[in-house]
Image 1 (tube, rainbow, N blue to C red):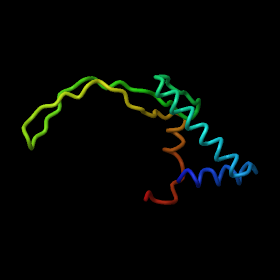
Image 2 (cartoon, rainbow, N blue to C red; image 1 turned 60 degrees about the horizontal axis):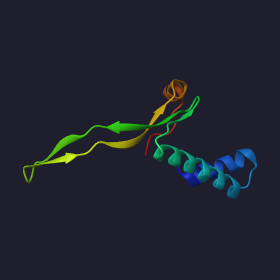
Image 3 (tube, one colour; image 1 turned 90 degrees about the vertical axis):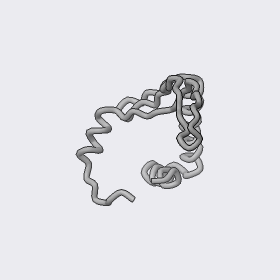
Length: 99
């Protein structure tokens, strides 16, 4: 499902104009991104957590050139679904196969 399809579905279920739904969805993503850039985790009860994970400094190897490079410690965004969300997906009716 794409962002456009999500906006269309929310609009049809709520009766809110697509333009307003699009602004709301865009604002939601912007808040999530800005919070995570600032180092904050975002918790949505019943859905999941958007968390910032720290990756330690490590040595990587370029096999073709036989050289080692140092990858400094860095942060990556991650999503951890809530247990209730995972259970619903596990027990859900999957009538269509994944693309």
